[in-house]
Amino acid sequence: MNPDARGWRIALIPDALMNPSQQFRTALPDVVAVLETSGYGVLQLPPPGDHSLLLAVIADQVQEYSHHGYAVAAIGVRGVPGDGLHWRRLAPLLRNRRVALPPRHIIRSDVDAVAEGQRLATWLGNYDLPVEEQQRWR
Amino acid sequence: MDPKHPGKVALVANCLLNQNAKVCEGARYRGVVSPVVEALRSRGYVLVQLPCPELAFAGARRWWAVYEQYDTPAYRAHCRRLALAIAPLIEGYIRNGDEVILIGLDGSPSSGVRFTSSQRDWGGRPNHPEDDWEIVPRRGIWIEELEAELARRGLPPIPATGWALDMGRFDEAGSRRDLDEFLDGRP
Image (tube, rainbow over all chains, first blue to last red; front, side, top):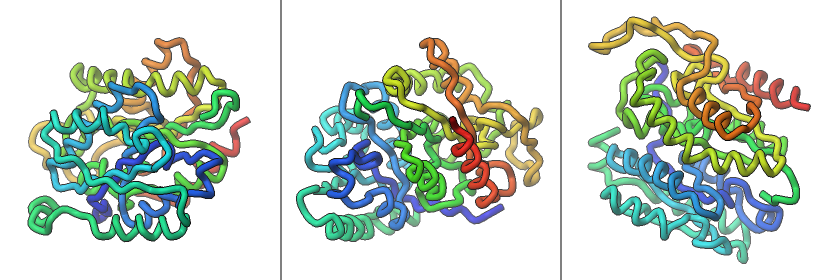
């Protein structure tokens, strides 16, 4: 069998970063490309609106990852309601599942997109679980 | 998506954007399966990630399994809950007139579209030799339940194919050719 290639790090991202609108496309870095280069997997959040059951399903997945050695982060985008992260709904769902809230990094569309991409890559590169926690699971 | 302008929407299996969802030893990429994303984005599709049915049911440390092992009332009920969670979003796209397609994961007992994995005698102590399962032309359990939920809503069948990641020997170039043919064969 092949060696397993998983990166053990995952980012929750808004629909607006997975599928940027024409307005955002040139103003934002290609976040999916940065995540790919940084070795992160993606958990996509739904577009704005009421998606209670889907958010609960996503919270279940974050719970499973968080309790088994995976590092989960959240990347928001300024200019979308709640930074696109549904945080007012998602945070209580995670707390109810005894999941520490993932650290958040917010992308801005009013600054240079290349610099924002580099800032994101640096942030992603620096984030992971403590070494002893990694060694326990990976 | 702009409700006035129908677009192109690709529903993608969870692990095509997140290989951490794979069963142990099943991840071929660190995170994103970039050839799939590239193929879809370059043709103007927006991506909608489906939930992973196995992860939240059997867990991140689950054993390998085949179709017959997941074909249980409890797992199908779990898949139906996931289908209820994502179906309203899909229904919105279809009712808007968007072209919606589905890219699953061929060979998967859950997310297979053209093929799933099968072996009637798997069970008990997990000590089977490598590659003793069969690949059979059939949907995985999750895709079956998702399609059933969409049909219950009166929606038309979604054109679908699978990225052949779980077929035993993974052939990325062949998988890419298959996907390109499927996408370019669309009207």
